[in-house]
Length: 310
Ligand code: CP
Ligand code: NVA
Image (cartoon, rainbow, N blue to C red; front, side):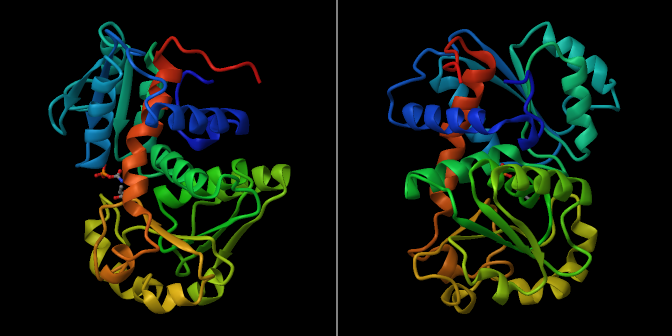
């Protein structure tokens, strides 16, 4: 595995499979105890968080290690001190760094200058830990994901990007239904298309959510205005209105279709209460799985349990 996980594109298919299998072992309590005994993780946050902070901090504790939380403003990343100097200093004290930043290049730069592993805990471009948690949730539900279809309804944002890159590695088709002008970034689409060709899956960008969900095995959604886009919120509320995941839209998918959301949700906007709290929702299973899949990732990056030879 690479030293750093900045993007889902840093992982190959075998590594994703290995991480998800290890996460299942960790979740079942069969692996992980003491795997990071005495190890430390620095957690840099430029944005707020519930799930990411708690799951990384609790995960490190459960593996026998310790996590240091660095709140937004604590270290003045790129203001009080350059990103490179923060990376160089932290590398002398801790065994790993996770970072949630606005600019994607900040995490790229941390990884470049840190001698220890760096994990992307959400940037404006990607949220790989979330996509892996979704992968674990689908694996638990279906066993084999080959031939299944994930339909993302909403903004072509960080979460959509990571899911789009992950689907081909799981043998899944990916569809996004988004308003015109809110498509995923071209570079990521191209990368995902290369992977899709390699693994015999497909990537589709549509603008009609009703057409998109027809063959969906999982419908995924996320907020219409991400952290950092607060100024665009009013405009986005209008543009995204036809992209709400509600009971009507869900009824147009297969009866077995499940629904997920990375959370936090803006209830009544991108998703309705009845769907998020309904029997087809797996959003909380996915939130729980953040803990297990990140423990697997931390073990592989910082621990002593090595992956089996491919
Ligand atoms: N899904 C997720 O990353 O949640 P937080 O923003 O609360 O960490
Ligand atoms: N797209 C959202 C995800 C939050 C977990 C954001 O970046 O705010």
